[in-house]
Image 1 (cartoon, rainbow, N blue to C red):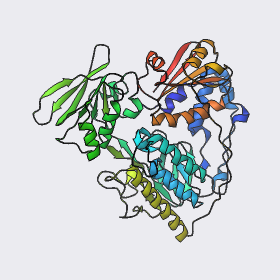
Image 2: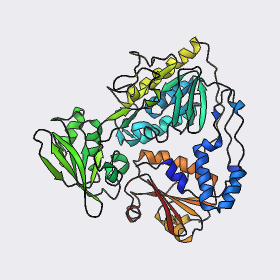
Image 3: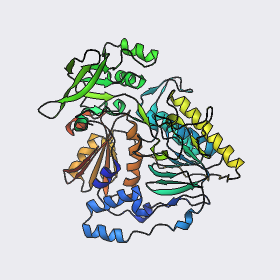
Image 4: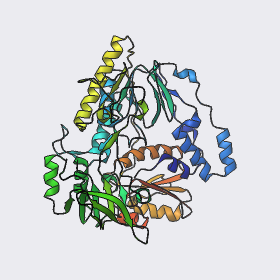
Length: 508
């Protein structure tokens, strides 16, 4: 599940932020030009925050008193490099480019094409990435890469790019919050999970159907239940194995007469007594009961045409991906499947100064380490391109102040203080529910949920601006399953809003 920005913004209530909480973007001779405040996602969330809790008149006054956007002449400079996308490719490119003093601007994404950090944000144990003999979770690996890029001076923005023009020079890149001009671009937008488009798919999406077992598998909805996974590759087999931690049994539905997964993954699946593999089988539709709950899947045998119903409580997709190259259609050369065409052994695209890295240009290997390698190649190619065209301007990153540490720990019962803004755990939630006059924002997460890690810093930034006017509580559904079940949480991340003991919004 993914909590959408409009849903969060619409539900947040508000009081105007204190002047001390406002932040100004560092301006240099290579600064991005912010768009007007009305188009900024943070501004939209902030305005919604003010409008929901304060009286309408007060909200209008605050809106009228808002400062005018910064003058556009602050953004006359042109960036050395803009990286569109994150994940192993984007972050590696950012690390190399930043260490070369290019000061890359990285648009990590927000919703389009999946969560910032790429597909590894929905991966459990990564056992084959060099340097981690005991393995590492996908989200942890992406966190480390992101911090490394930040340390060397990459400028990171969790924003979706909505427009790219590589036909004019310098190139123009426009996100939800700002417009940037750049001498070079690296496309590292990855690929997006495919859907089956079953007749009742939308009806049961996030209520029984999911494309992310890692995100939603720990939900009370699926614990102890019979589940199904569609697909025959590494993604599907990994998800089937992961779900056995929570489900009583998992069915793997494979259209072909054999698995396409690696031999190691095939062995794990076929030797697992809690997984049944159905070859030559496809899902036709989803079956629901009289309570509106998913109760099974209508199946059809490919070889015989015979149809049957398999009783399951959840269906997870692991059927491949579509390259996120839509922004470049008609501007650079793509292959028949939409993957960006690059010269063999390089990251060069059909447009001089535009480079591609990661899964958006790799339809064959699609591994984290190959994506990282292609990110390295792209960054080194950019440096050579800028130098050879006399476009490079070095930027030496100033020392950054130490980031504010987040509140940690579940056991707040011994030190609960209602005057604090941020809390964690069911004890704090119960106390605030009965005793807080503020708007209460409850974020439900799970340890292996990559989108949760992405959403938390975004919410934290908004909450920081409205200190003493809202309360924020994080609930880990594995630590507090009874609370999650009582709240009807079917996946993570999920956000609920309460005011005066009433739920005013539910966003997933």
